[in-house]
Length: 396
Image (cartoon, rainbow, N blue to C red; front, side):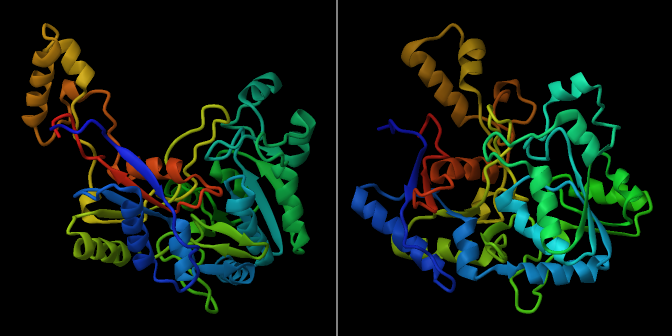
């Protein structure tokens, strides 16, 4: 009998996870206990996803602003530093900026405008148009920005980030200068040692700055790639993906997770007999249509996953088949024709018109986004998500 339900995403409640906890056993136990309590069965190719936050917490992957300051000073010289293209976030960047400023005498902070990389706006495009400002070429001092646009509070947080970041730099004893520009080379008028803080465009920014003659270019992904005085670290992403823990501490993105997800997969197999995929997930890759903020402030959606989650969907568009190939059929005859098409589909549908409109994104990005939406970022208490039926199709 065919199943009448497709993909199901469940939030799984777990104990509060602390540093040093055996997170693999906690996750496996929690999923199995939830299945028993709620009366559902685990199946092959289910996906268990664990939020990066609790993974990093179990690893004790924390660092202080002092550790950040020491690494910044060692790598950028400790004098005047150009800090460019950070996102506007108290949770994501403010504590990092505090540590960065502690490792410099002066910080020239260069912000993207009209918005940061993930869509947090300083001004609107309409305001730029009215003022006759070209964001591709014009460099604005803080005074010019205020003259043209005044105070601009973030629509969700109510924070004036230009003021907030400037005050934060000065609060630790460093001199602060703020400019707004989108060409990374503009910072070289102010500083030749540059820390670029952009996330997804970081490789391009580094290339442009080096070609323009910058004395020293270091990315946020190159700060705390090794432990500093016993601190946490992330060998692949440095400070990218970090979050505020306390007023003087950050929690970094988790590191060395592949052994962990494979270990969970092995435990599930031993205890349930099922081949269950496991992944770690962070921010989902989606955009808010009202605030225009792109959620993905982490360097990747998933820093670790089992091998069965490699690749992209290989799907036929059912409405294309119904409207084109089988337009003269209906009812059971149409259903059987579509099911046969699914069973006989090629292993690679790239370029096939019958797959147009399907989502050519990586499985880990799609499933991770689903998990992020399911778990949320507040008090739901479900840091583990069980996704069932994701790999099903109409023939299952």
